[in-house]
Image 1 (cartoon, rainbow, N blue to C red):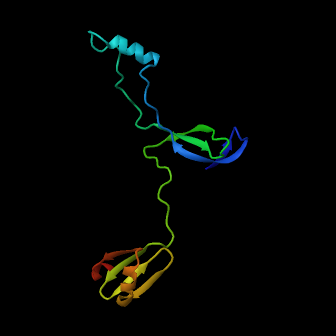
Image 2: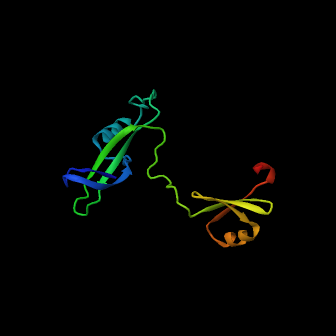
Image 3: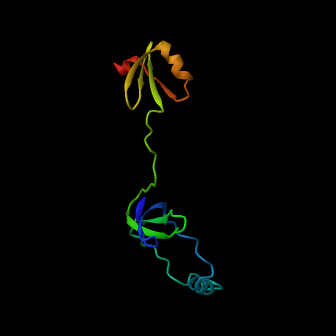
Length: 142
């Protein structure tokens, strides 16, 4: 992703990852105080929050400059969403052929063209590793 880098003072390509919260430290002042207060008799000493209203978290992206001498990192908060995916499946060109078989004729369907292929040509296509075959009843097609 191309965006502005403060250290380079210009637009640079950045590596994008999703920010994840790190593990809580056992030695933080609040955690030490809480553990000391909880120890011994007396049960739960502080209130436990149970009325959560939000169902989603805000998504935070971690941008890292790919310039070898820079490598500066910054966070970019975006809106809330239930499902977030970075770099999903890219659509491939014509590397997979889908073949639908019915009786002695099959239809070869690719993203660019539709070809009617005879049963003789089918043997050539099967030996090609980039072929998926679906057996379909003739009534479904007509």
